[in-house]
Image (cartoon, rainbow, N blue to C red; front, side, top):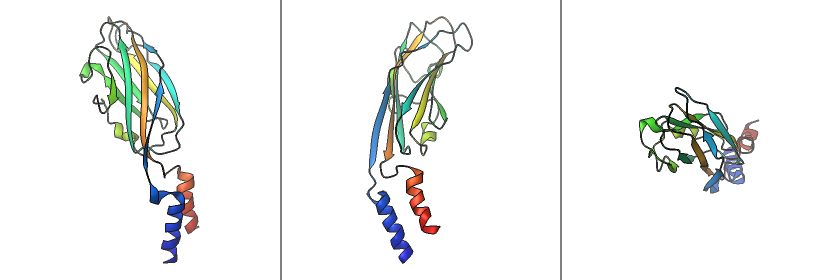
Amino acid sequence: MRMITAIAVVLLAAGLAQAEMQTTTFTDTPNLVIPDSPGGAGTLVTSTMDIALDHYISDIRVYIAVDIDEWSSDLRIWVTSAWQTQVELFFIAEGGEPATDPAGWYPTDFTPHEDMTVWHGEGGGGTWTIAGQDWSQGGGDSVITEWRVEITYDDAVANEATTFGALKALFD
């Protein structure tokens, strides 16, 4: 009984008994030019955003706004988390996004090309990267004008060292 009481005290002290989900949005306006390809895979371009968040991801959305000059048949956009998990969100050749100047949230407004739930459970803080590449010629350059990362997290679980360290100390 003493052990159960001690665990309950530690959980209360760590704030787990009063968990509350929070959502924070991080925004960058890189005006990242994705050059038209000369044919085949074009130049891969990237931009980074530093996210200051000491919590694990429970849910996530990503907003992307792209200006497309004339036409682009094979524009691709990836986002890589601070834990280096890459997800291809945008692949215009396979449909789902409008052909001109798409702007919206994944997975709410648009269906991501790959599964975004792979980011669930990762730490949200650190350097995130957006990358773009054009795979066909003749449409002109495209520009990622804005991107946002919206992370939902449990505000009571701040970091592994604090939360789990307190529990581990009971058994040391």
